Image (tube, rainbow, N blue to C red; front, side, top):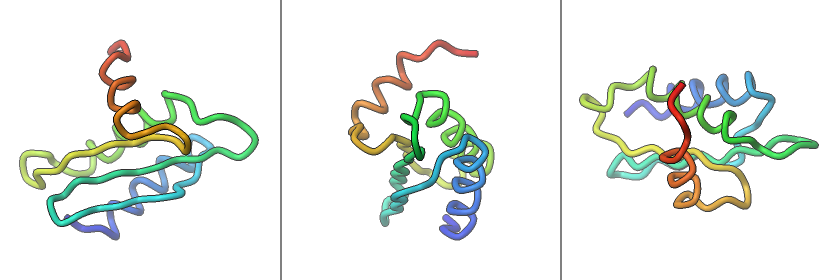
Length: 90
């Protein structure tokens, strides 16, 4: 996976939501964890979903074979996954 492109895509999506990326990790197994923060306001589920969808649109999971978690500071990746799974489809 192209880590530079990943960072660019995630950063652009985060900025569009008024957020910044405080951590982005990509391990050898293509597990991606992105942590967001927002100055003066809490990161909302929609912010995480927007970044998540931007990465999904930019990288084909069937080709890249990756796992992706987007969360906010203070929210565990596991809790973020649970909230995204419970979110209604648009």
